[in-house]
Image (cartoon, rainbow, N blue to C red; front, side, top):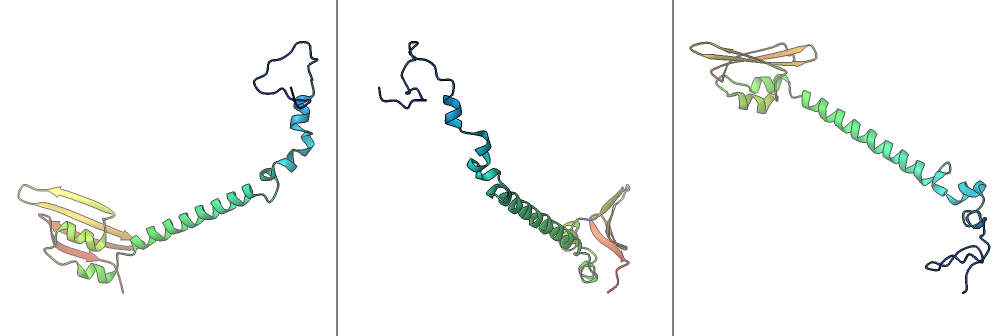
Length: 144
């Protein structure tokens, strides 16, 4: 049988007549002090750290895009957009221009239904009043 002096050939059985070698694992694994040399991903400046840095950069870019995207949605409340809202428009038409309202107040009377949409953007407030789901009035604190 042609075998390495420190390893048992796969599929062979242990022969009790041969002395067991206690050091085969140590020779197979080598000196523990050499571990950093055999594991290049664990060293400083390694690919693992580079991947972590690039992952953090990607996360930062994603967060910035999200913040910018959310802030742009709020910019739909402009004087020009509020001026587009006309009497008789439906809620759906108003929301397509101004987006979803910050708050909604519904009041059901016996003869009519009154809904108030309030849009807040910083100190500015836009109020749209619906009577039977059609724009009846609008008020705004927006300036140019």
